[in-house]
Length: 168
Image (cartoon, rainbow, N blue to C red; front, side, top):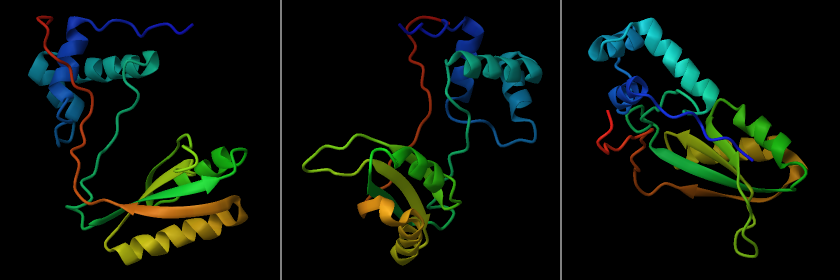
């Protein structure tokens, strides 16, 4: 039986609402957020740490706009790896500096044999192809088959969003 995460208090809700579009690009972003909602920067950091520890939020991270950085080719590489090797393969692939995220998903046989996914960004499809080939070389005989699915449009990425329901 799993225990539900603790309920958010009014201050945590204000903090999440103040950061749902991202942290400000300032030297001390937690202090900037705190000043906007009447908290000390240290309290903002402590509350985020508490929310991370209790599972209210999973992570705080940077979401880069790859297109603005010149990485216009985005390929989701999909891999058919033996189930007993997929965890270690995923750890290796996820550690590569050109892989932005890597995760395991269930297969959907017979149409979808892939169980490992790794996002690769490049300045061209050729560059992505070279990086995917490097992954294939590293994984070696653990790979049964693989493919690359290229993005055809930009999807908006967002973090946690709170909906006002009359609560503070």
